[in-house]
Image (cartoon, rainbow, N blue to C red):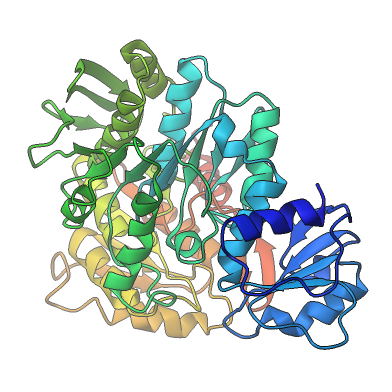
Length: 502
């Protein structure tokens, strides 16, 4: 594809605010780039405005590295020797160029976009499992990783920048995927990373407090999520959790809404629910009839995730047999209520990604009826992120746990002890479960997990929250190997050894 082909796309979409400076129309384009440090010969460089700098300042560097064209919101300096076009919105231009360069792969498959604060990852795994059960190869793009056929890559971001999104979708299409389940973050929506992508359906899971270090307030956060449903093509269904207070506002957009709920009347709803560590079994009533669901997933939050996935599959016309088999065949999701203890252990240990006060509340409320003894919670909060949720998470843990161990998450550039102190402020006499409750602190996460397993009595349930599937810990400017699952299993092995159980 040439620069002339791509600039014609920008012109046809009305994105150009000036005629090109110089001409490279016949130059072959080798990639769409937005980081001047990674530009290679033949790339088109799109200069994005960042929080700290404007990418236009690095245009000369991109040209030196071989860029054949520059796309910027600012006009070119007088001595530019390559094509330079100005646009009103560089992020939109990046998305449009990326989609065109990779030949619009989403048009060749059914891409289901999933947004919301909690539940995106599990819902995406469920959607993918249902498509696979229907005989449709399904890619995955989200927090845990990017799956293309049998290959899974580690995810740097839940939703990467537009060129990476489109490149991954192209790989999926070329490898025979007929569908993709994509987690769509609020950052991605606010920054137009998925613009110009024709979603086949959009799912709204819920909206609770998170990412307020990036979004100004909850209304701005919701408006970012709302963009997914404003972008849906005509006829694409919106699958909306009507139990969430923000759900009705999305229904009123009128983009073929299909609602699901547990507590309210909705298009798709479950029959009587019962919970155990062995999983879930319930009926789901839909406009097309009733399904019977059995799942290894645990707890009420996963009922919502299953409802969301089933709503999408039903709206997209997948068979009931495929839906039931797809839900049943998903044994679990990495770091999402992942039981890491075994039948040999006299205590239950669960690892979960819960890192907001609402997610932690859902986790603890799920675990409470499943614990034969005490509920022990190990958690922390990430550094350089929304500080306002720290005491809120402390209050939730205090209200719903019997024993708390506050530790480090990813402290990043912050003092981990200060983060712990801010969490502790939420644990007051008014917020604790009872006066005998104990709250311990330990900056070292490995030691805190080991201590929790050591202190557990037979029948206790230990929850390790916050990092889930992550295999690293960010301390200062270092990213160190760390896996809650592995650390917990090591602690359980020591406990069995000390008690003489092999």
